[in-house]
Image (cartoon, rainbow, N blue to C red):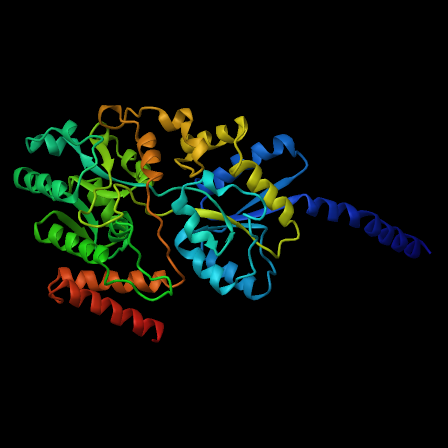
Length: 429
């Protein structure tokens, strides 16, 4: 009899508790990202802002350090099973997911997000027709990082270049002088990586693909970009290495007079105290003779997306929209906080006036306000459409350019033809 009574009590407890569990789940937003010190930190700060007005909502941030793409793909193939409410995607990958899973994400433009307040180059990859699916996160705004001590050793005045919009021809000219006087190549270059070439191509306003998805490597912008790299290489202005670690080591062991890359290199440069006072950063140089080219480009960046399979998608959308896409005192302070706390520069234009964005940084030459400069350049970055086939394209181009540098390919046209051939082979075309 006692067992029967006990059993009835257990059943009654389960029935009474069920609505409580459901209520708790209905007030919970789960987020997947991959770097607790960067995007995870930023989301924790966003959660703190949201909880000021929605204290009953739990924001669960799950660190997926490896194979997040594979986990998301598996969940999408299973109809959304096991997926969170929100996930972070790298900008160059999202077009593949949007094409392969066209109904998997929530249209946030329809939810009322004002995309005119974000850097437009971020909005391009997340747009399909009249729908926009993501909330832009961080920028990879780029610049030319230069060692002022080597410029001085070459008899040049760094102030002649600080804050100036230069053409690549001007950069090559002083790069030749620096190499002749100091024996330092101008730029550290990771030859097995596509990023530096991508930066240059995007600065031209050029595209790797046509509107129909076919390759666009025979454009004037792309040919001029390849020619620039060959010129830099032939003049001895590239300190070439293989691998990310060797590239970072080249920068932090005085092997070159500079490099071309994004804002997120601030942390790596600052990690070496000996770099203090030596670096200045100027706008990405301009390739001449290309209509639409700018002294601005981008490398890297990611954005937040809400899964349509989420039972709490309305809450997830409200969270992203309320914190990441709204101008209030608390949200603008949030953007200011993540810049200082994690070096995460947001792409929400109203946030760029925060004190941490405009402050001078004593680590850099003449206390340059580097975040202010990167934010200014960010607003001028041309839109680049990656397409779902970006990864095989960049691998094919990187291989062809390396062979061009090594003399295995003799001309720009041969290099482009080789890249096209490898791409078509990989794609089964």
